Image (cartoon, rainbow over all chains, first blue to last red; front, side, top):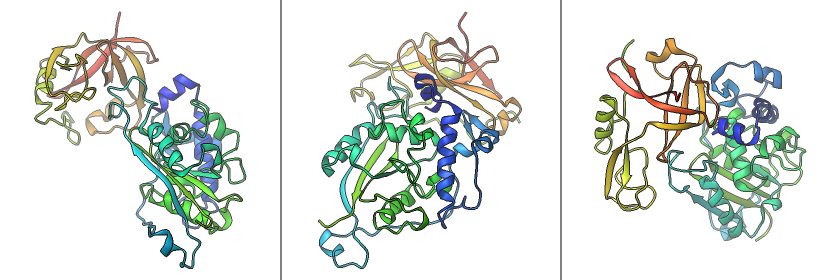
Length: 236
Length: 133
């Protein structure tokens, strides 16, 4: 899918590298990140060994032992908790049609996420432009492209340039993967990505706290099946 | 190393016939008898309409490259001496998209025409592709 994205939209190694570098930068501010203390430039990325082209070593997520958890309860009970509650505003999961990786679908970028995202946003009563930050499943760098585009946060084919422009940095227009992602915090199959969204909305992001943190979208999957979760703080 | 030690073909009740035909050097495609769509891989129902009235037909073997990867770290020891090698994603003329090893004559690019050739590894046969002249 990464190669096909390159063919259709002109995405280049430097765009994938921009994702890996951005995640690495965020990880430097996260005490839990496996890649903390190991900064990386675009040149470092480009010099890393090819695994399966177009993916280099640092396009691939980590293999990590770890744990993350969230506690889900009713809004009523959550009101009495010591921490500021985070509300599940919308959630949806979907398979593409036909429901397979890529063997029977004409357009592989019509992923499950492109079906799930509008449903999740509608349930939450918000538009993609309303989210303050995004936590995108990133088993590989290019999956961030599929996530941003599949959610409708950017237009189709535009995600590479968007990341490279710096808009997804902690002080950018749309901070993405504030924990460093699965690429650099650790690969807890995306559960850490949900937990990061909660921490940020609660204002517990420490050195990596984003300024605007009311509303967040979280994804899982993106190459085939996909899901979107809209979380928000405030009183409800 | 001459056999697929860690990743032998994943044969099951739905796909054994397909692997048997590949071992004879033939590329077959399942086809729905209701909506008439070819699909891949073999499975118990049509992924397009859900019908279980399925048949099989020989594929033309012709298609065009949809995408590709170049493997620098072999998935199985049997491929270790081949790196780097190219795995193609090919849109067959019948519709389904399949995967296979590019022979050394293929210069991969989207849209390039290729033709199925059995790719032999030890006593197994996998899908392979050569340039379409």
